[in-house]
Length: 194
Image 1 (cartoon, one colour):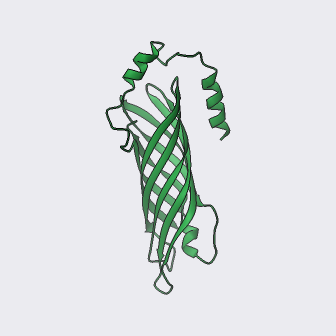
Image 2 (tube, rainbow, N blue to C red):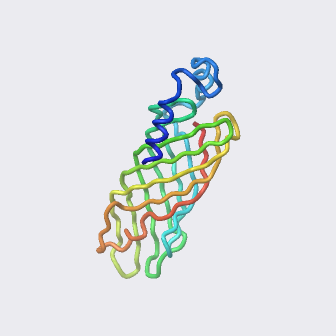
Image 3 (tube, rainbow, N blue to C red):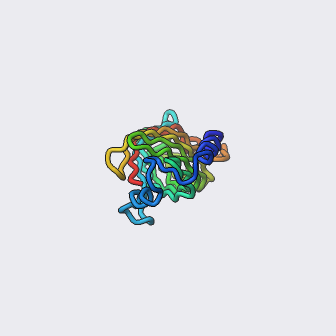
């Protein structure tokens, strides 16, 4: 969160109306017009979540609404929907899946070639854990997730890169062992067409 505050202070210190290219701010806004409608997702990611001994494949779609843009520094509101399914599980568990809906904030440093940033969100995680000898767990828990990302701009409106992050339920209940394997270390690829 300190990095977010630092980025905001640095961007506020910049002269008013100055753009990354040094040209007219109106030209910059016209150039930044996006060919994708605002209601469409702006990023997608594919990766794995590692919570030993469980490894889960995960997929995320994200929406970003900028509330502050200046000289390549963007502060955004994020909305993320995603799903994941276990590829390997602990002994005694036959299946595990999790589905998330999160809202949060993020920072993006937008450059002509290198783009990086981070985001944090909180919301719900509906997970299901199946066991041969116990009742199925199917619960919704309060869940938080954060990640950093680094990518290269391949086209005007397309960035491809790597992300790393961590997700976890806000509170654990020992009566539900499947919750222990919800979230974990996340790594993978992202594409951003913002």
